[in-house]
Length: 315
Image (cartoon, rainbow, N blue to C red; front, side, top):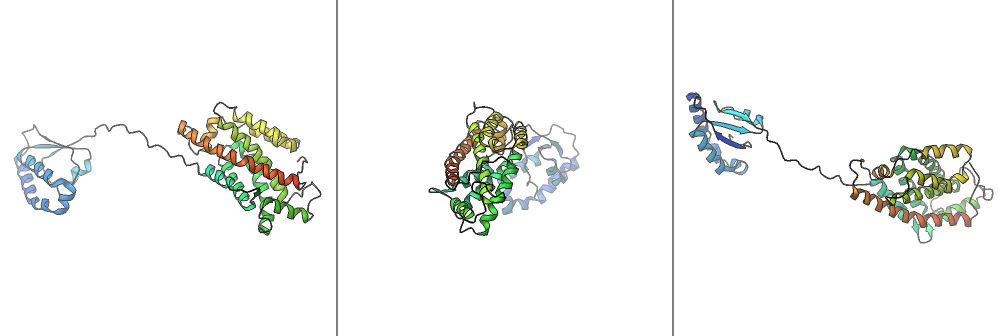
């Protein structure tokens, strides 16, 4: 129908030189379409009363139709002699829609590690799931942590294989470690390289290192993450690393970006999107992760010490 288009303004034309025939044909065309205006669909979608008023204006004078969309002009091209003037008014500035902070990877890490402790025992299946979530989280972060992530992945495979063979007998961390010790695969505290105990020992040390790095990000005025990571490395990993690893790890850690860049990566937003609210939300999640890891790592270490599986050799 003729008026099924968004028309912004109808302005009487000052030009009296239009061809009379054009006006006549225009008037006839409108009259022929008058019955369409009674159509219920037209009433619902086009505004029947408004359309009638517009029709009276068109039939009584020459017009210039001002519309913001030129294709609509083509849809009623039967209005011979009508002057089309496209108008693109400046639209008001609209602030970009706020990006919702998802942090799905960090959320998975917080959720899975929080569920590892069952009383005073560590649930092995849940622990492995949490370590997998942490591995995904680390791989998505800074390139400077890729070496730590690679080490975690290797040790996770060592821990998961023996557990999958008999998950019921290794339901808790202590029962898994006891089963390996009773099998005689270790020589005292010298652990078999391809064993769950060896994998879990190094995973625990790696998480202790990560714990201190995460804790340093909670305070906005804390040390640079690079410095915090180096101190954590000296405390938790360096005593058990040989010459090669003591050169590789610090070199990798020297590439750690500043706090804001890490917070943005952990929050899965860009630096431009990072604001105080997002910063606070990521910090809240990191704080919950630190709170969950503390007692978990203590229980983890207690089981190793009790079973005399704390291998302190350098690698």
